[in-house]
Each structure stands twice: as C-alpha cells, then as structure tokens.
Image (cartoon, rainbow over all chains, first blue to last red; front, side, top):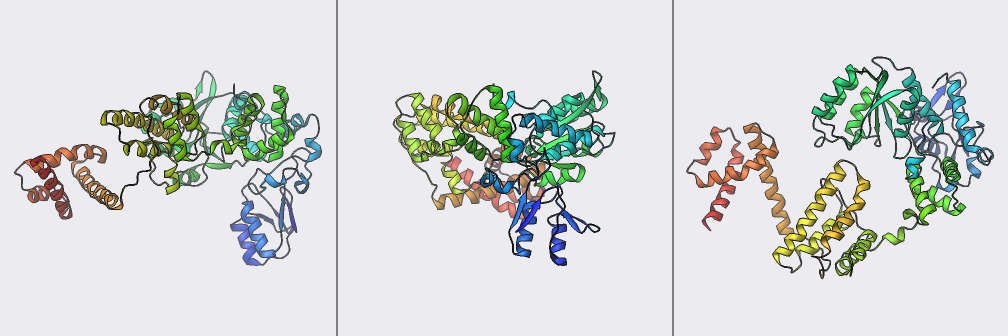
Length: 124
Length: 414
C-alpha cells in the first residue's frame, strides 16, 4: 500500500520515464531532484495521481490529509467519515480526531489559520 | 433568518476548508498593484468563494462593486458602470474591488456583448477584479483562464463540516443526534450552505428534505392525475410538491427522454391539450401554463433556481379551478408529423438566415417580417425568380420560398 500524506514530501519506487512523465504532466505532481522526493501541490490532480500510481505499481494508494491544527496526519484510515470522504476531491487539509475532540476545537482551528497568515507575513 | 446567512463567516479566519486557497487569495489582494492579473475563483457551490470575497473586502476596507448572475451584465450595462468605477477607484476614501460572481452564468443571449467587454477589462485592470464560477471547464472559463490567475476551491472534508456544524449548533443551543449529523454531512457533499440549511430544517422543524427522499418520489403520471382530482388547492399543491417531476429550463432543448417525461409543465401541457374540454377552458389553462413557463425561463436564465419552488404554488392556485376532472396523458407527436415539423423548421430557419443577411437585420427581427414578406410575395405579381436574383439570394432558396408562397396562396384561396 502506498500512503501519501498531502503536504508532505514522499518517496516512490522507481516508476520508469513514461509514468514519471505522466505524473509530472497529467497529475502535475512536484518532484525535487536533490531530495528525490515528490510533493502534492494545490494544482495536483489527485484523482489522476492515484489512478496513475495504482496502474503503474499495481498497489492501493491511500491519500491521507494532514491536520490543520497540529500538522500531523489527520488519521483518515480510522476516521468515522472515511466512507463518505472522497479525499481526491476535498480540500487538502482536515483535522485529526484528537484536535476535533477538544472542547474549543473550532476556536483552535481559527487560531491555526491566523498563525498560518502570520507565518506567511500577511497582515489583515 | 437562515442559518446559512446568519452564520456566514464575517472574517476569513472563521471559514472552514480550502485553507491554502484562502491564503493565496489574501496574498494576491494584499500585494495587489495596478496591472496585477485578476483572480478567478472556481469550485463547487457552498465551498466559500463568495463568503471569502465578502469577508476579505470587509477586513481590508474595500468598497465592493458586485455584479452577480441576477444583474443585467450586458455590454451597455458594463460599459456604463466600469468607466465610473475605474475613475473613482477610491469611493468615500476607500479602495474599490470589482466582484463578478457566477461568471460561468453569463450567457451569449442574456448578457449580450457583456463577456467581450469583461475580457477587455480584465486585460488592463486598474482595480482588483475577482471573478467566481462553479464550472471549471467550458468556453468562457477557457478564455478567462488566459487572463486571470486561478484559485481552486474544493469540497469541504466531512470532519471540518462536522466542526462547523457543532459550532453553529452550540451558538443556537440546538442539538442533533450523531446519526442525524452523519446523514446531514453525507447528503451535503462538502457544501456548507446545504449543510446549514438542512440542519436548520431538522433542528427547528424536525424535518430535512434531503433525509427523506422517498417522500418526494410520487410518479409524475400519478401525481398529475391526483393533482387534477384533488379536493382542495392545498391538496393539489402538496401533490405537485411531492411529485418526482422538475421544472426544466425551457431554453435548453437537449434533454433526454426521461428528463422530458418528468418535466411537470410538459406533463400538464400534454394532459390539457389531449383532454376534451372546450376551447375557452383549454385556452385559459394554457395561458396559465404559458405564464409559468415564462417564469421558469426567467428564473433559469438569471440562475434564481431557489425561486422555482414557487412555481408549484403558482400552478396549484391558478390552475386548480379550471383543471378539475382531467387525467394525465402523455402526448407524443406521431413520427410522421414530428419529422415534418423538424424539416419545415429547418427550411424556415434557412430562409430567415438569408433574409437577415440580405436585409442587415437580426434573425429574430427577420423572423417577424418573414410571414409578411411571404404574404406580399404570394399576393403580388412580382416574378419570384427575378426578385430573389436581384436580392442576391441563393438559387437553392428560390425553391424554398416558392413552396412557402405557394402554400400561402393555397390557404388564401381557400
């Protein structure tokens, strides 16, 4: 099983130049030559990416969303909404179970956004 | 007040989902300078495109000029608004932002020339311009992608929907069971607006339309027959609302057979025209249907689909008295007749196109004059061939016009 955590660099076994080309051009995946790792960008088409990898590697591809608050994996495999969540079409970040169960989860989520704005040096 | 409006986030930080897109949009607007490319926000409904623009405008102190699909966005209208907008970039000391919502709804017919004006405006903007569209493909979107930066919005993940739903329920001091929440999140399909509307129905009225789809699946034929035999207006309205039928956009002719079968107006029309009622009563009923049809067309062209719910009420109250005792009947035009109708329509279109071209008028106007022209030709002693030749009409058209005028002569002799 190939596990891809969105927002994190990941490795792939050698896929050959044709598949690599498809990953770059069709799925619009990012590749870093120095790190030799891949990254899912906002413009990456995740449906196409999973389809290419599934066919090329003959293995299941599991997309995991990161937690917007703690930045760890949101734990999609154990999520109660797994059945109704199509991770290839939803926005690229979620929240993990631990953060969700906090009493002030929504406020913490909003604060996390403000922190991201501060990191990006955007003042509003 | 609708929860979807009451709890529409006033600050960007209060929104859920599409975090990267929100940051990208803020970066664009904060760093905006003369000549910066406009942005096009694309994504499904209820994902926060309009909310984001409204919240950012408020937070950054912009004056927003908004034109959505329900406004007239013709060439003339845009040309009258935009120059004053561009020359008054600071109204009341504030910066101005132009927001065109639902640009994929700009139509060639309804918004005559508006799209061309919009494209020219986008090439040299002097104020920040934000466009929003549900569609990600299509001719207009393709054109817009060349001149605007795209920011994509995606559906909201279910757990984030749950987070926002919990927040709203807490604010309203309302409670829903875990099962109901799961079902609401499932049917809303990543759309916050739908989620809040359905949650409000369930929390306040104990009923959510989408959770009980079986209550809204009465076959169209049974529903129309029951409608005609209902004892009260209220009953007839209830039946119409529970039928499986829809009100299809009358401007679009390409519906499949099933979609046409479940068109409520078409079902009522075919039942009325095949009934044995007298002409006056039939005319009265057809007038009512015609009125409803015009309303459906206007609602569709301005994308005010939420207003379609009132069509059932209009029909039930206006048609109730005249339509008692009718039954459902699906009228199919016989193939021979249909074939003839299509063939003749094609011929007439050809004549109208040629007439419009030769007289420098629109095809719509040419269509108005065509019957008069044919009538004059059929009654006068003008040599048709010579007339058409003088007017540079194609020789192939001669036969068409000849046959039309011959038909008219025959009718007038009778």
